[in-house]
Image: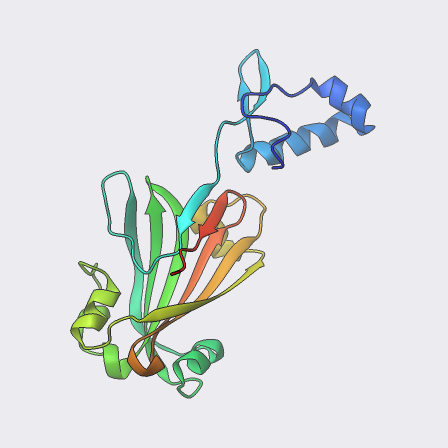
Length: 214
């Protein structure tokens, strides 16, 4: 991770690592297995173990990524009305337990799962619109909000980390690593919150890139 071992560098033999670190052969094998699972190492049959030539996947912190061949794609997992979690209700300035519209999706890049998205909308805005339909939305949810007169002006992210749930491990095909959690509130005119999103991605091979206006 520090770059001391460059991509393509061959690791010392297992016997050498056992002697260098004063641990058992089993411990070394387990450590190598973890690093392979996390994408840092790769084995070459009959040659040894090497540092993998792979840079962290840099995720643009944008509002919407247009689907493209070999690029981003979306899998819609759930659409429906749900009671607003306390954190979401507070961000939308509604009562806890009031119903909101939930759209839950899996974002992929190059076919690989990179993010789980749960987006919540006030029913007074989203009810009866494309947002409530169980299908993909051309141009994304923010295009629908703009058509309704609620253009996105800015969003605020609160970023934290935690260990994943079993569902997140399965959907994102995660090794034993924490996830990055973004709690995003999107605002329209007059600082009105129109969308709250909870974005989950693996922490081991991903970077967040923000572009801020000058």
